[in-house]
Image (cartoon, rainbow, N blue to C red; front, side, top):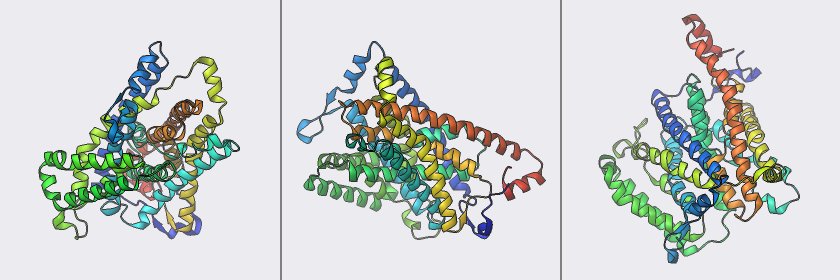
Amino acid sequence: MPLNLGPLNRIREIFPLASRAETLRIGEILRKESIGGVLLVGLAAIAVLWANSPWAESYFALRDFEVGYEPLHLRLSLGQWAADGLLAIFFFLVGLELKREFVAGDLRRFSTAIIPIAAAVGGVVVPALVYVVVVAGAPEMSRGWAIPAATDIAFAVAVLALIGSHLPGALRIFLLTLAVVDDLIAIGIIAIFYTESIDPLALVLSLGVIAIYGLIAQRYREYFHLHPRAAWLLLLPIGIVAWALLHASGIHATIAGVLLGFTIPVLHKKTASAPGASPGLAEIFEHRFRPLSAGIAVPIFAFFSAGVAIGGAEGIISAVTDPVLIGIVLGLVVGKPVGIILATWIITRVRRVTLDPALRWIDILGVGLLAGIGFTVSLLVAELSFSSESEHHDHAKVAILAASVIAALIAATILSVRNRKYRRVRHVPTRSVEVFEEGGPR
């Protein structure tokens, strides 16, 4: 049956029909991220197996091997370089995607952006509340409240790309936007709640360098567009300096990636003020750097972060009885979909808008479960929440891995069924297709 909102049926639709350009762009992102997602899962699996093998010591020795220049606070382990350095590339892409969506994408209108933004907020707040309730009365565990709040874009869209060939484009845009906004919230949480001390001078210098980076990118946008090497030779060194200064300031260095991404111009200079102007440098950079992020940076981070020694039967019992593990699993597998669906439902009532007519609430449930795949950012928050000597550190990682697999399997089951329905509808006679377009698959 069509989505029944009673008296609200006359209201505006959210994500009516995405533009063809936007649909093609989302499809390209899904293809690149799906490849990265496979690499991410593969390297994470290798890390887990290696960390629990007879050669486990060599894995931890590699992860903890330190390199870098100590006077600049840059003597870090390989694991830290992956979390602080390589992951900044991932967050640079997040910054580019967010700015592009809100400047030139289908989400530049508040009426279209409000649903995924509200869903992302619900998908952060409810899992955090679930975790806090589970670990109530244990202050040393409460620091991990933000672990189940994040969504892994690469992993989630990889699952969607593998099983969602016939799902509506609106659903893909909804997931991608929700995941990006979710990560932006997670970045804010990291900057505000996981920064213990700040060096004001280093912070001011970092922001100054980021401003210079942005001015150069804005002033010479066409030059960087036409000469790909120029970005590597000019912008990359400036970005590295900004990253190093922000790292020295005490704020997590991945924030530099987002701030640098925000400075990149979205529109071509000659058409920046024209309605419907074509995308500019931000989209060009996204095409150039997404393979580097999805294919190298995120999988390597997963390799160094996912390796956790479970410790046999005794270790498993210790982990599954730890409130930290229970809170994270319930937060990601239950709290995420509940928060997303609840927030979406509330907005459809308050804002008097409805979903795309082809979608059903079961589709939103599937997306909500996909958002329960925490992985990359959740692992990062786990690193910041508990010291490596704490048993909660390893238990949190086990919980993230287990919850991500559970959420992915349930989501894949639901969305596979929905995908078959959409595929059947697309192959019925024209008259039936018209019925589908009016009310979606029943």
